[in-house]
Image (tube, rainbow, N blue to C red; front, side, top):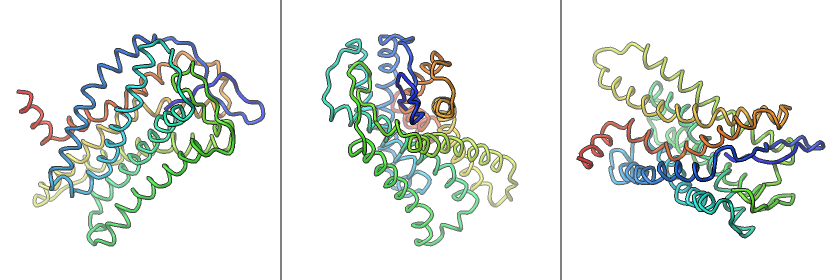
Length: 309
């Protein structure tokens, strides 16, 4: 989510991008604030719908989405208020080193954790819709549903906890940046390339490919009359997934691709204006996820409309 620096290291070739403040801090403050408040409300509604509705809670395809929303809610009640405080005070804010590392961990580590989890969700949705018999037993459900989710969480959290709080190098701190800790693992070309490709670009490619594949399979699959009820259910599952996927495609994939291009040799002074706009819109993705949840969940959308009216 965050990648900034002011040079290309000739020894490691680690690249982060330097840019001037093209979008003013005041504009950022009001845009994020106007999105953040309803986003938190929608997150609570979506998660409450999953937690307190037993039918929804035990439905397998809701589990990964719930974890993604939970991570997103944690982000929106932590770093987003911190961002607003930083913008409101025009970038003047002294912070401790540990606070800066926590911010960097949440902003970077938890962000890419939820991206990888959703990438798995796009793969799993094919299994749930077209190979549901694979999950007929408890053992198979554990191996194909619960275990991948658990392993991804353990891997991502372990990786980012180590590089954030127990690095093999010295993290840098600068209060003039919104994220005041620069994680030093980005100065190691191989490790940063692994992070950029495996944690950023690859999950987005999986999201795009699997989502498009799912749409094609659902639209062109021929259902017998006796399976029309299941077909409607599968279309609802597909719509939910595609609504989330669209946000990743619009707000996350372009920035991840740009970061990879910088790592592969694109000059750091190229397209810096475009990069800042990508970063600005990228921070809108997590607050937008709860809206996608409500819009793509018919029963939940009806409840919200009834509550408002």
